[in-house]
Image 1 (cartoon, rainbow, N blue to C red):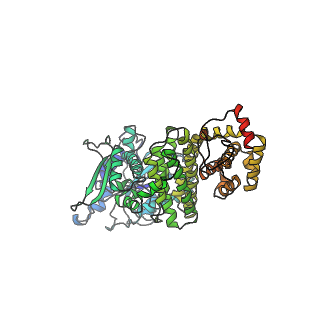
Image 2: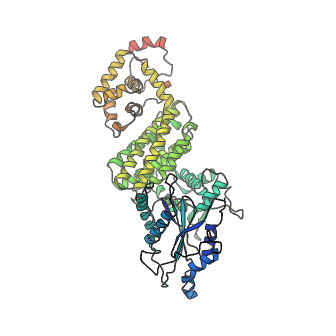
Image 3: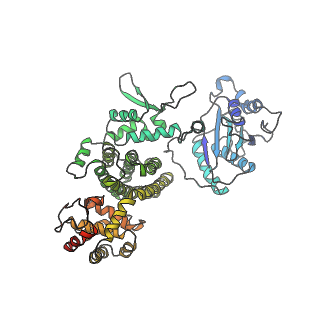
Length: 572
């Protein structure tokens, strides 16, 4: 159940007209009163002799009784209460009780207060009601409405439990503003998948990911196709900005602009500037220097490493450091969403969209601890979109695998801190990452599995012994998984590159979340290939590439079944 306190107004009759009329898209059906301050209040919906003006005049009587100088300009209070789509259909009597509970909880009409404000609850759809009230009490005083929105939310949680409705998580005031009903109806009329507010919020977040200064940020906004207005002080200092979609116009044909702070609390210019104060442009180039992996594939490998470091911070750092890591993780997801290939783009965009809620809480982020993640996001954007196959596609699976564990760690951290909405958003994000991973990993894992099946029995037995030695508690589970042959091929690749497989396995298995993974072998494959600096695309490194393993030894010549037998015998 979602209660929403709307912007206050000055015309009671105007709001009543809206509530009783058919609506912009004929969405209002059978509008009628379900409850009011007076059981005999006129109902224009069910009584033909009652008019909108009659109801408005009675509601406004306490306001009109005041001398003009004491009348509040914005005296119309408006609350909507909406049930979830899966909730059972409530009766008029149940909605009437909900209305009384809401006006009592918010301070409009406390229980047993005979001189409270006048109010009326109108139902014009199956799933919600609107409550209109005038903000002058019968005794001429003003109601106490401190934190009326928070009180309505708290009462809604109690009503959900009593009526067996969907239990929503309590908010903490850090969520982005929801689209208004007018914005939702406009999007529906224009057949947009999102409201303008939601589309702008997503686009601005993507544009801000990994930026280093104002010039780069505003250049990205313009490149994304947005209309941008900057608010400049007389001194020439930049104070803020507004953005609009080119095709989102008001009734006068003018673009509808939204300030960054109204899109989300962390998208105001001062909040974005805080990201830049701890950024290090040289760090990105330094992270890339000396690496044999370049382009989108290299950027994804470096992002995986940055996320692993952030995971350790969330596990063992202070709350402020963890909050910074979670905010940085949001930037990496935003960057992945804009640079992903078609097969994973939709799921990664949805993951980034959902995780936006998890990046904000009342815990103040310690800026500086998100530097590596911000640089990883910048690196991803600067290296451009990844291809769907080859090393790009395989490293996409690698980075999504690590992102899943980082987001899961963030969800657990929020849950421990009783950040219910943030935890729920992070867990939903993880589900979309799972789907994206399965798509990205299908081809590279199939190729690895096939190569592992071509290992000789003695070599497979040797790799199995390494697993039993390094992770005895998980060994039988790993050996029984479908991904075992892919892991065996990876262990053989690591051995050929000059690494000690048992040492790599022991290190990889000591890392968190391994025992809760759907496929332990899959997780170990990507951890080993990243740690050992092995190609993610196995076409670049056939098994037993060299009779004398050495660091980074590899060949691009494929191993066929016919010629591979002699090579495998030599490798043994």
